[in-house]
Length: 326
Image (cartoon, rainbow, N blue to C red; front, side):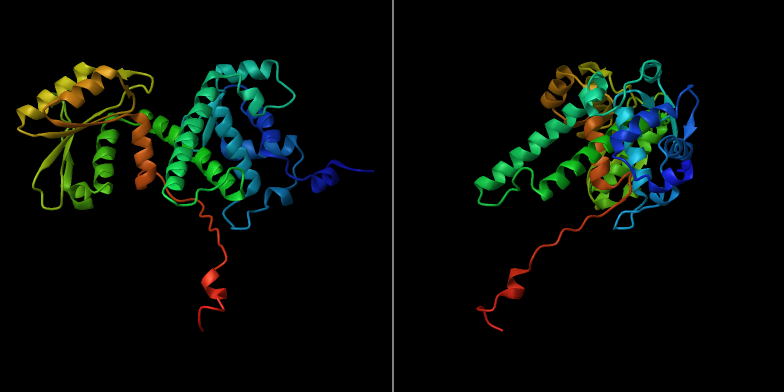
């Protein structure tokens, strides 16, 4: 007679979308649940064997099963069905509880497209894909070869783009949840990584305090310290809009210090009035919104670390060039 243990031993890991409903179920009740408990719940409900749970990628970068469960939590989070209140923990949202009250047979991308937050995330990915395609087309016009759609290389690029967009979304949430002074320190570090102060964050300092007049930090423009850039950092709700008044106040603050350059950073967005004030100011003002902030953080390795490197090799034609000499 087949036992549950036997069934488990013969059960292969399903695709990650088959794990998503069970992942949501593991969070029922509203408590904060550690990801390790989610792994155990999903494996038990779907009878995934310990052998399959331990299978790793060929690169040795980690457990396939755990990676798929984590990606299921990412998809659920993008649909606002769960949230990640702190490191390593997940919690179901009221919207997620509503889904569990009348669960579908399967939670896949088609189902998640019913939720506005998920659509917004997909639109971000699509916009970046379109921008990438435009870059490829421009390269093609210059005689360089762009990657045709649907090749394995293209699929790797698209998957990497999707992962990067999800990472940036979670980064913005983490930064917004952090104390205000954290953002000020982050900006000085980021500007240092971007080359300000000769690439040395120690050439900058956090100055923000009550009554600071709108200046939260400053950093030398280059290693010689010939000029200074003043910084203002506003940790606002990502849906909030920063207007022209905030930028005018910042311009006035740096003008009072005799400074000509400033960077205004927010976790929110800027409206057209803010952009107009910055553009038409006699000062050189750079605006960095939440989306641009997290893009720069990922690009410059601030608040993130490398997880996996995929190396794609091709034939070395010179090695097999028998007519070109020895």
